[in-house]
Length: 347
Image 1 (cartoon, rainbow, N blue to C red):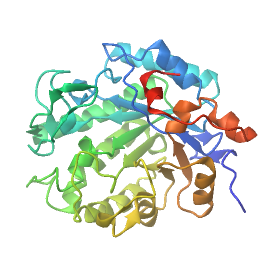
Image 2: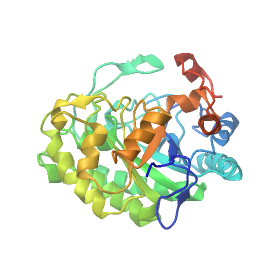
Image 3: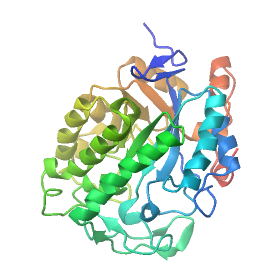
Image 4: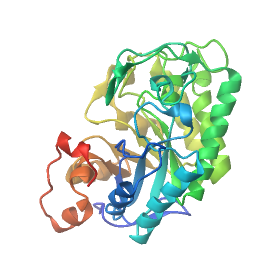
């Protein structure tokens, strides 16, 4: 029987989605100078509340998590209230919303916060900060064990703050070359303690964060985004597959709300994944609810879901171009094509 992407989907005993279409996390850099969500962000998210679930743009868990200008936080009372305005508007329009919890690790910049840039190892990245190209990246400090304990605690606190702000759950950002992903890849992690060298050790931080967030808000309200392939600010290494081969069954034991791939084009295959795409690799190693993403159309997503490649689809750029995406696909109307100019303002 063909799956109807527009019919309800029971995520778990706590959350039912009105359809299988998720809004992918989309960095917009539109918070105010105190990293508080603005009224423009309230309006932006409220207009897209008819998707099954909105995943927020990355929300930084603490000051040293910031790597881009005007990215919203969730570590001050003003930021929490700003997000409460967003979630109230989404809920008033019948929607549900998860907060994506974010620390960028070695691609943070002290221009935004002063102090050390933390990463698994003292290995920097080349280049400069997007939108602020005058800022070049610096060599990070390798996080101490006390630093790691503090980071784990701050992820959990951010999850609690997200609940206070009215979110329906949280998605931990463990993908795309940011902090958690840096621990999971050999190019960024050369530690010689219990957080490095072996797949079990390299997966330890991701699992500690996941467990702390579950303890704070419950497994049914906890999700995770990962990128075993899709290298960003990082070099591919064939040893990385073993880390994810260990991590995925461990995540499956935790009965997460969902696992989310993080890639811009899911037709891309990776040598480090033995020629598999991101979703194919994740599906082979993880039997829980899986979210596909990466240049899918509504029809190609429906086909992939019917073939068992994943269970839900996250749509990104088409939802920037079409706030009424669900209405249009429901009625067979033509979608407005996305253009890079659309990133310049919220609509």
